[in-house]
Image (cartoon, rainbow, N blue to C red; front, top):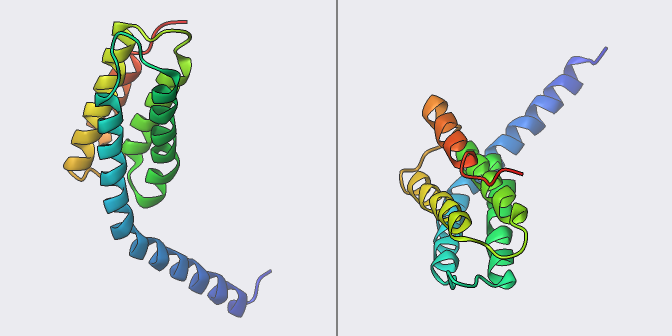
Length: 141
């Protein structure tokens, strides 16, 4: 059984960690906007007739970073959309067709809107519908 000092110490450490995350959240919000802007720029640079593996890898890298970081700062919907985008880009074998490009574009556009509107958390029922509609764009195996 833990004594009161141990419990207080844990509570203090937890409070300090939460305070540190909250302090970084403002900085992360700016990074989030920059990452989504970069994702948009990279997508706009795609040669739609022949997307190169380098560009697809860059899209994957940015979305993977978003997937891994956003939830830590309360942007769970961004994490879910970015995870869907990662799966989509990773799941494309060979050349990316027009349907795949349209699906990637939808993910990028929706991420931009979610970040622009400052949506935090999961987005509730609407967020779930958004994520499901994006997942429905994935090619069937």
